[in-house]
Length: 293
Ligand SMILES: Nc1nc2c(ncn2[C@@H]2O[C@H](COP(=O)(O)OP(=O)(O)OP(=O)(O)O)[C@@H](O)[C@H]2O)c(=O)[nH]1
Ligand SMILES: [Mg+2]
Ligand SMILES: [Zn+2]
Image (cartoon, rainbow, N blue to C red; front, side):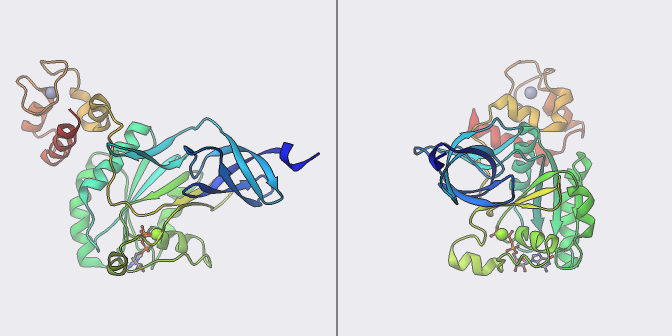
């Protein structure tokens, strides 16, 4: 049988633009490309490949996904990872994190129906971390799990939360995503860098998404730092539902196309006035919806 006719199955464990590393059932990795320009394939995808040489192949087909995390601006969409069961939104007090990005991470998770964990790293920087924790209290009150730890000192508290999940680490550059992988997999030695140095060089330290196995059913994906988390693909009603504390009030507004900006008889605005919805979340919502409608 010639190689060209041999089709096999595998999972994309690394995505570098148009090139992919696909892991086969025997654990071997081969380098693959896709046919045509538009790939649509990403880290975590299960694929059928046609071997073109003993260690190279072409991706023929991407199998249906159980989940898809992506971001988008007005021009294009960019897949972050496929088939993940959990998003770990990594933040740190230093350098300071954008709360907007945390909110967008939560919204992306809700709308893709993926569970989410907020991880506050660099807890060894105690004074700064305390302030960051206060900022994040709001999200804990909404029901999102929040874990505070130091990847440099002790990663153990994260282990039970990763068990039997395929998690993807998402966050700004410099928050310590790759440092978390380094702590989880001793000896792996991924490149990490001071944020000031990344700023100077004008690029992120991690440049492509990569999946690592922590156990038979436990996997984790490191991804490049995000500057923006565009959600142009979400419709206004999807955004409404992604703000979980809005849900009890949706459908109770006077106008059924209410955007909860300043419409009379708005149930969401009434809930804010009564203290049931935090004004900071309303502000995030309104900023987001103003761009969409
Ligand atoms: N003090 C302290 N510093 C940490 C900790 N974890 C990571 N760092 C430092 O934070 C900096 C950034 O870490 P990285 O792991 O490269 O961050 P990243 O999120 O992977 O960044 P990108 O790959 O650019 O997205 C490095 O200088 C790390 O040494 C921690 O627990 N405590
Ligand atoms: Mg990194
Ligand atoms: Zn309303």
